[in-house]
Length: 361
Image (cartoon, rainbow, N blue to C red):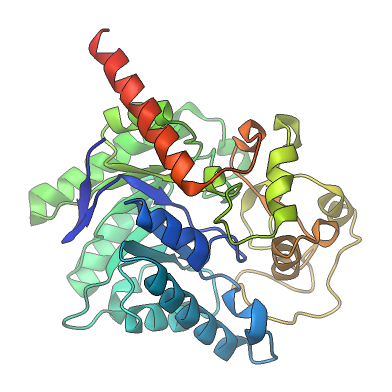
């Protein structure tokens, strides 16, 4: 298992912990992953709704919230830290600016195309910019627009396949297409990255995400050319995860049949642990009376089946009667609460085992 670089940042272990919100990956989980040599990622969505920032000033709460979490993570770790900022957030600009002010190492951004992300960089800023894409076409568009408008190229690309948790960059009828299997997406995005390398002499490592759970999964996709992997679901049921015990136990208790694709107020399909809340929402019983946050650009409060901010915040706090958990395809494999250290040990061990086995084929 080799280290890899994102620009001048050296990542000792090629494992990125995916950003999970609301409140699932904050300073606790992110710092623990960074301390193990991977990249720990703080989710910024709804971060101002948590704790003492829960006042009526949504914008200020979120600025204060992300600033505080980055500072806490820095106190806990000297490793590489990132933030995940969804491009569909109405306060996208605030979150990007604040993260850069706090000298975050990496900004990961998906849920749409973050076409203007480089405009926030200034001379001397070392923050790396990493878009999350679900196709080579999206990767090519971002590279073209960034180079054309800002003379900048992505420092890495995360390609997220249809087995990922949370919001998915595919239509529901595209999830099982052969062309959308992660290994095929990685190969396609590598073509774009290699074209940029040949044309502009910039290395753009490709990071594979979505449905990766074991060290063997890691080895197989890295054999296809991925420089690293991103895991989210695997890190939920850990002591260091920032969510409530009730949230974590929902993953321990989940079966494969509980995992379903839902329609999100964001306007994208999402993968979740299906529960009574979602059933009631589908029956029109969870429509919000008023929009308290105006947090998602694409959400229409008048037609949405439920407020996703309220639902995810409730779930984070352990109130799954009024919320639900997003998950990747592998939640059914989680049998107990572990630790970040143990997960890294297992991933490294199984990666090495797969690597040795491959030599004898």
